[in-house]
Image 1 (cartoon, rainbow, N blue to C red):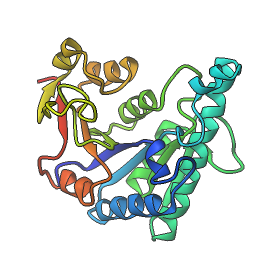
Image 2 (cartoon, rainbow, N blue to C red):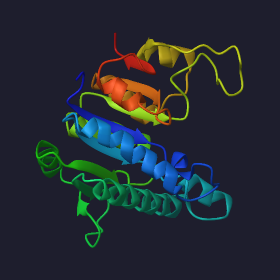
Image 3 (cartoon, helix red, strand yellow):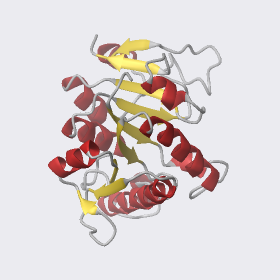
Image 4 (cartoon, rainbow, N blue to C red):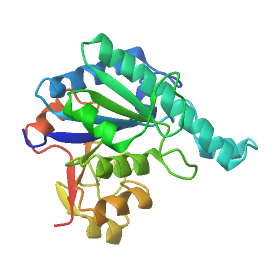
Length: 236
C-alpha cells in the first residue's frame, strides 16, 4: 500500500447520481463498495462529504437567507449525507464513528482530535460532518484541516473528472490532464482545484492532494495500491 492513513473528500452533489436532488441509493452503494475494498487492505480512512445535493450556504443568499444562517443550514446538510454514508458502511460490515464540528450529541460525537486518531488506530472509519463548525468555510477547507489534524498522508479529492486539466474538460475538448503538478504551478495557472483556504493549508503543511474520478470503479483501490490515478499535487 502506498498510503496507510487517508482523508477522502467526497462531493455531496455526486450522491445525487442520476437524480436532481437528494441521495441516490445506487451511488451510495457504489461509494460504499469502493471504500470497503480499500478498508479491507487495512487502510485507516477518514471521510469528509459535502452537502450540495441538499443545500449550500451560498444558495440561501439568493432567496434572502442570511449567509451565516445559510452556512449553518449547509452544515446540517453535510450531516445528513454523513449519516447516510455511515449507515451504508455499517450495513456492509465496517465500523464507523461520525464526528461533528457542531454539537449534536444525539446522533454523533463532537470532534476531538485525539479521539479521532484513536478511532482510526482501532480500525474505525471516521466521518467528519458539519464542516469545522464555523460559517464561511467550505467542506474542502474542512478536509484539508482535518487531514492535517489527524496526520493523514494525503487528501484524496474524489470528483466527477479524472484529474486537474489545463482547462475545463467539460467545456474545452482540447484540455489536457496533468499527471503531476506543483502547488505553485496551480497558483500560477489559476487552476480550479479547491478553494484558496483549503489549498493553502495543504501547501503550507506539505500535504499532497490527489484529484481523481471517484465514479470510476476501482480508481480508489488502484490509487491506494500506488498506481497512477488522477492528478498528484505536491510541493515538488
